[in-house]
Amino acid sequence: MSELFNAILYQPIFNGFVALYNFIPDVGVVILIITILIKIVLYPMTSKSIKAQKALTDLQPKLEKIKQEYKGDQSRIAQETMKLYKEHKVNPFGSCLPLLIQLPVFLALYWVLQAALTSDNFDLLYSFIKSPEHINSVTLGIFDLSKSGNIVLALLAGGSQYLQAKMFSTKKAPPVAGQAAKDENMASMMNKQMLYFMPVITVLIGFQLPAGLALYWFLSTLLTALQQMILFKKNGTPKDGGVIEGKLVE
Image 1 (cartoon, rainbow, N blue to C red):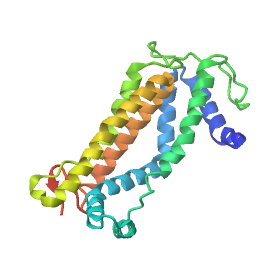
Image 2 (cartoon, rainbow, N blue to C red):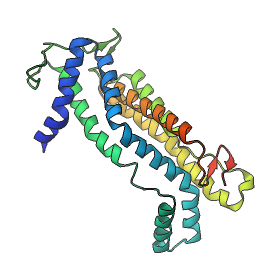
Image 3 (cartoon, rainbow, N blue to C red):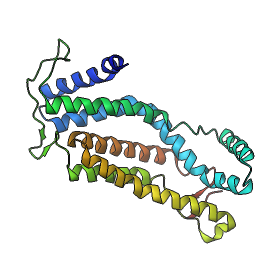
Image 4 (cartoon, rainbow, N blue to C red):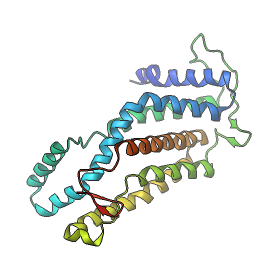
C-alpha cells in the first residue's frame, strides 16, 4: 500500500516540486503553483462537494422540522429525511468524497515538504529531473517554510477557513417566520459555533505544522473560498426554501 502511495502521489509531487524549484528557486512560489495545479485537477469534484454542502445547508430548516414533527420516531425521521433528499436531488455524502481524496494529497505534500525542506535526499527524482543538491527553505527572504510555529501563516489559514465557512452560515430567522423559526434559529446557532470553532482549530494545527504546509493550507482554502463565491454567484439565491439574509425564501 505504501509503495502504491509513493508511486501515485508522493514521488510525482516530489518530482514536480523539485522541477518547479529548478526553474523558480523560491519554495513559496513553488507551493503556490502546486496548490493551483492541485485545485485545477480537483476542481470538478470540489464543485460537486460545494453544491452538495450548500444544498444540505439550504435544507437544514426542513430537516429540523422533520425531526420536530416525528420526534421520538427515528425510523420515520430517517424515512422522511431520505424522501426529502430524493425530492431535492441531494446526496448527503456528496461533500465527503473530495475531502477523502484531498487527505492523501495533503499527507503526500506534508512528506514532500519534510523531505525537500529539511534534508538533501533526492534519491526519488526521476532521471530527467535535475537535482538541485539543496533547497533553500526561506521564501521572499522572510519565512523559513521548514520551521513550525509561524503564527502569521497559521492566522492566514484560520482566516481563510473562516471566510469559507461564513458562506455556509445560516442567518437567524426573522420574527415573522413564526414557530418554525425556532428550529431555524437552533440550526443557525450550531452553524455559528462551527463558524468560529474550525478556524481556531485551524490556527492551532497550522501553528504546529511546518510553515510550508500552513502556507499550502491557507492558499488551498482561499482558492476553495473563491470557487464557492463563483458558484454561489452563478447559481444565485436558492429557491427550495430556508432563511437567507434574514428573509424567508418561498
